Length: 247
Ligand SMILES: Nc1ncnc2c1ncn2[C@@H]1O[C@H](COP(=O)(O)OP(=O)(O)O)[C@@H](O)[C@H]1O
Ligand SMILES: [Mg+2]
Image (cartoon, rainbow, N blue to C red):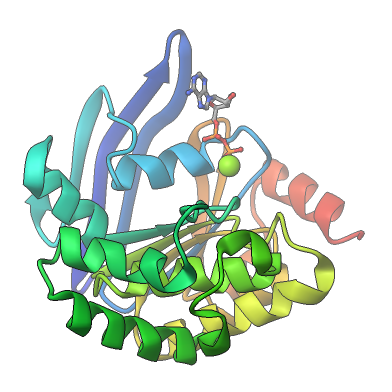
């Protein structure tokens, strides 16, 4: 039951043309909660994340952040994107900026910090995610795992209220997955509110407060990890779990 909602979706519907990709979505994420979203490809997980960040508009329903409807444009929208940090599968760092510049840029542009303050904070964050020595390199000179940790540092530099992770380890070589999950585990432990789309079931079991299972644009189950993995109720979830747990 919701005690202190930070993110709320009520009856949210989203179409791409005729395709009904989010169907009557209701989801509440409390402050400090970690919600893992899983489900088959095409079930609407990325669209859900993007809608919360207003990278996608929705046709009906309400999305609230901290009790306020999402802003539509302008500075308020830029602030929303800073308040809800997003980490994508594909890192999305600025290729022609150094690691340090990547982490400092938004702080100066959106949060209005002085460059020296921003850089100081960036160095501390890069240290925290374990890439302090890479500050003056360009993204292409880093491994995928390092780039993803920079992307996390960049989002954290904005002092977000919540973080959205959309398959943050799916593009990584296996040996780099854990270094990214470890940073995310640490964040969760520090009380960050997080929505994490992932196929890493170990992370879901150990770090999530809730598991949301989506299929065909709907939330089919919204359960504790123990409940979901120990006793999936829907045929869709049983089928999905039997496929991914075979690996
Ligand atoms: N920009 C888009 N235009 C049209 N269809 C889209 C677009 N983005 C996603 N879709 C479709 O919406 C559905 C949900 O996609 P997505 O949210 O990416 O699912 P998931 O992240 O669970 O794989 C899929 O059928 C996908 O093909
Ligand atoms: Mg996706």
